[in-house]
Length: 375
Ligand SMILES: Cc1cc2nc3c(=O)[nH]c(=O)nc-3n(C[C@H](O)[C@H](O)[C@H](O)COP(=O)(O)OP(=O)(O)OC[C@H]3O[C@@H](n4cnc5c(N)ncnc54)[C@H](O)[C@@H]3O)c2cc1C
Image (cartoon, rainbow, N blue to C red; front, side, top):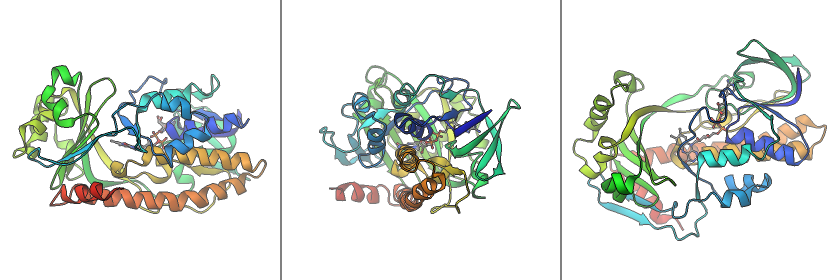
């Protein structure tokens, strides 16, 4: 089997690329390891930035569809200290450049904009090898293989395509998250609903904090963040929710009860998530016929809220470059990477700086200063 263009990964980045190519008459095949589009909950809210994610959606001809998904009031932001004292507050007056949308709804918008059958589900790529002159053979877990003239690794943090270009591997950033949910918050968890407010909450102290969103369905999604050793989560039995809650809350013994409730009152399991990043400034020399986008190219900590936005912008820019260089694959890839590398290096440095500010000894001071200084 041969595919002229093969995109590995049906995340926001890979789908944006497929869509931008589709509307310019270029066919691409997308492969994803998930068994179906509904195999995994996409969860969480994303703020989509004017100059990156929204720019990409315009190139994809989907900006109007995106506007219909925006959660009113979702850009409201508040910063609290560990005593739950509000140190910064910004209401959403509808004029901000970072509207919030549900990640799953955004992915569905992209997915449904592609011709039926574009995404091959249940297709886990195990590796790829160069065949010469920029062609590659890609192997799948089911033992099958295909060849392609253009291979794009849009397969996220643990990309199977990245080794064709670079020996870099993501490293632990020193921060672990534990995710919790409080559904139907106004009715079932009014104290937590009040502390989070209408949009995004940051409650911060030295080396730890809570990052929480109000979701479009009225639930609260909470990331408890801790500066801990890489093996910390392995030492906790997350199968026993009550014990896991106690172990997480040990770190917040002297925090206000309304903030501790974001974990104590959560429904369902606690989900640990280690935060990894590629080295800031990760790049590679041009290798014929293959490139990367999104997290595969520049995995960074989520503290600048850029990862999904950049993945979409990468996808759009790669699509536009390929459409602008018909028959000139290498020129298109070089033009794409020339802009990709400095853009992602700047965002990765920004994310790393934000992580330092968020979890500083005197947190939330630096974060309050940052928000206050914003125009
Ligand atoms: C807790 C958290 C909060 C975040 N919050 C934000 C935020 O507010 N704003 C923001 O902009 N970013 C945020 N991010 C970052 C954002 O989620 C990522 O940067 C973004 O999803 C990257 O998109 P992608 O398309 O590159 O990769 P992904 O979304 O990871 O998609 C990769 C796809 O590839 C598939 N895949 C993986 N391996 C294979 C394989 N071997 N074979 C076939 N398919 C494969 C996967 O199934 C997946 O569908 C956050 C990240 C985390 C962890």
